[in-house]
Length: 270
Image (cartoon, rainbow, N blue to C red):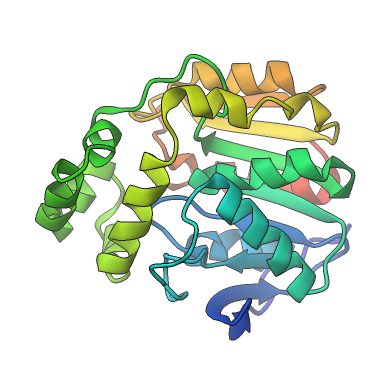
């Protein structure tokens, strides 16, 4: 597969299931790559990857510039169903999959249709595994009333401080951090008690494609031991722990972007 360094990225707005959805697309080889973002971001986070590999990066419902309707099902199954319909909308059958953080919702789809997934990259993703305990902020978000109060009190400065990302990155997230996104985040976290996370990964062994698991060694939200736990459940998966990196390892170590893109395009593991 040829690398498409500098490929033009098109931003589209179309109705999917009669809901306005924004996604980014860049030309690339088949099967295309589906990039799935986490909280509180949008498909914009994947632009450095899209420019190199091509693919699709939607703003999930409730995030970015996509619709944030109150009647959407903001839980793992709701998003998995939506991703399946999105792939049908863009006429994609087989695909390569990259996910980060709550982009783990796409693992529900991958377990449902493993024969359609050509390869997989898991980056610091919510563990659909036994043994995970929600981090402190998530525990507050999961509490009725307390979560709403905490969301309402969040400032631009607090968002940057709590995530530790560069200011320009936090500014981009803040632009989309409205009440619709806050509601989506609260509903998503509240839909997933810890025992439910393990249930959501009950069929991970069905995934049999080449897989790379990437994790920051200093991730403050998701312990890097879950990188190895994912690899034990997915046959043949390789693990790349990134020394000194946090929850967004490619922001701390730009070489991670190169490694992920190389894996997607050639199958070479770091």
